[in-house]
Length: 194
Length: 134
Image 1 (cartoon, chains in turn red, blue):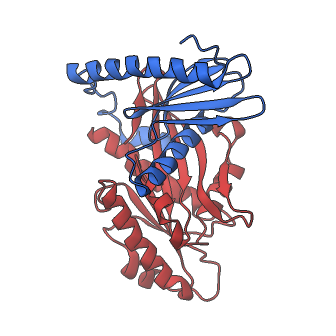
Image 2 (tube, rainbow over the protein chains, first blue to last red; image 1 turned 120 degrees about the horizontal axis):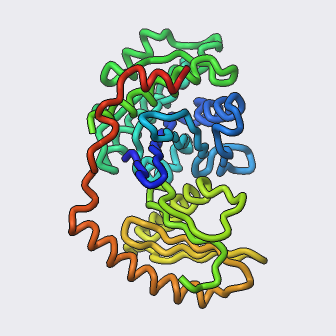
């Protein structure tokens, strides 16, 4: 739920990056962190294992600017992608305003994408949300690799409701801000509806 | 709250900071709020697994600085304190103030004061939104 603080005139929105293990969720956040002016963002907090796999979540606050006199701040979170961290994924979806599903475009990760997307729908439902109703973007990551599935095939398999589909190479930043912009716009449009 | 605490925060369970008071200084309050909520959510998950509803208080004691968190309905009262205070005193004061807070929240909720005032966002235009990204 978008958190509006009338006293400090701030809108705080929570965006969660979801997807299978090693699909590039943390890489998306890392790129945003590296390419944003320090005054517009806070620290990138990573709760990771010793081998740099996300253990609980990554978190980064990002300030975009002012709308109608209210500062808009986006709190970006990632979930741990590995299957056995499901309990943590559920918790991170609490209070979510928008979701980015980061799909791994490699052929051999197709099953992992499908499994993770089902898991997202189920975990959203358990928190009282419906994937078909919340702001949502599908990012097709790793488009620079050789063994990738075509955009049409990925969309046919993973697109749920006509959501924006954005091709990306998170490691170089291609498509990263387009993805953030697409989900942020939907979240702010929801605000307008009240 | 006279607990000789360093900083006190009110945070919602989703990790949004609502208010802070005390020696905030350079403390990264946004991250602290998010991590406190994550901490409560994780221990709440553990509580559910062993058949408890939730763990209403959490304490973390460091060498110099410590944190005490109380769950007050949908809010968290987060107290940061050092050796000028003690865990016992912070626990006592937190419990007292939690009861007052719970009463205040109940009053506000029952008065319907949580209803949105006229939303300033109803008139947001596509241009307003686009301007954030240029």
